[in-house]
Length: 81
Image 1 (tube, rainbow, N blue to C red):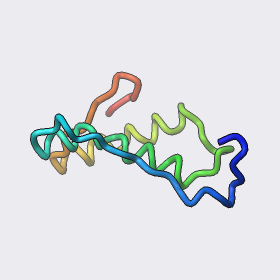
Image 2 (image 1 turned 120 degrees about the horizontal axis):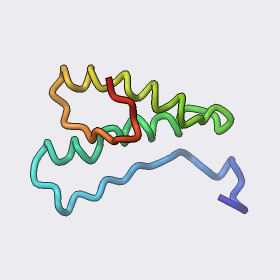
Image 3 (image 1 turned 60 degrees about the vertical axis):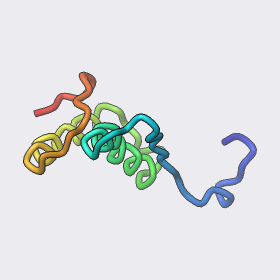
């Protein structure tokens, strides 16, 4: 944020608005792959943020989430395997 020194920022947040979520499957669909994207932003320096690289790495999680029965959003922007 412009005008806010880096030392004043303690971390990131990823609110999940849940007013319309009725089941755990609904929560999963809203949280995945959002959680992976938030982790990427929080743990990686800005200079390392690269959409194409992230999309490929994120796609690798699809089979894991499928095997675990995670109800994730399969965005058309990700080359899911």
